[in-house]
Amino acid sequence: MDHMSPRLRAFLSEPIGEKDVAWVDGISRELAINLVTKGFNKAYILLGQFLLMHKNEAEFQKWLICCCGATECEAQESSHCLKEWCSCFL
Image (cartoon, rainbow, N blue to C red; front, side, top):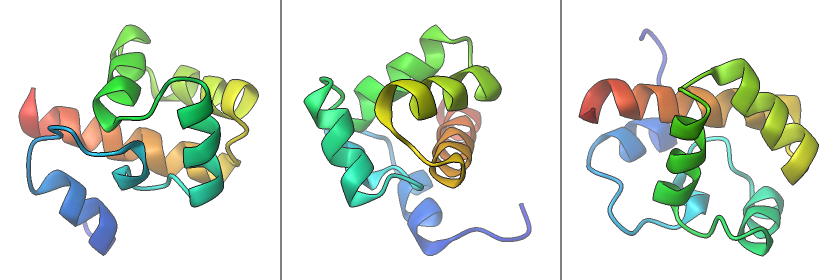
């Protein structure tokens, strides 16, 4: 990947562990609050949703926008972040 944001680089530098959902690249403060309200308080829980959708970025983005109030940009960045994490650690 030619360009990697510092936040994405930090997220990919280690296993998810118990990181809060706000650590996922693309997740704004407002979106993190929406996700926590829906029970997605940890990054690994959001990753689980991504995996349940068979790592389908388009489906995950649609869910994030429709069900959690993400912007298109947030949805794209966060799905890309989770996809990259899967490529590194799974």
